Image 1 (spheres, rainbow, N blue to C red):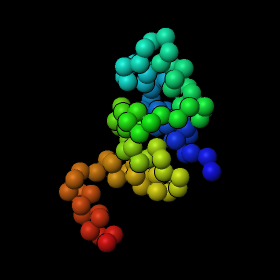
Image 2 (spheres, helix red, strand yellow):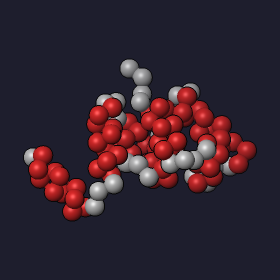
Image 3 (tube, helix red, strand yellow):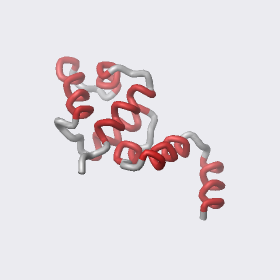
Image 4 (tube, rainbow, N blue to C red):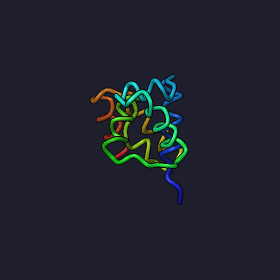
Length: 97
């Protein structure tokens, strides 16, 4: 089974309206290699470790779980839930329990 991370990363980057170069700059990557590194993550040629995935998710404003989620509906739910306040999220969890 192929990791959902490459496609989710690309989707999150586009949702944030960032180029690969802009994302690499936000992450503090070396200018000469940063864009290539993001490209390799998005194509699945290389996989980031968890710490890097977390940094990318934070830079893109998405939960890191979104990058690893292999279910489209659940991924959309994660994005929607990440926009809720703590109180709204607690209320939603209460309703779903």
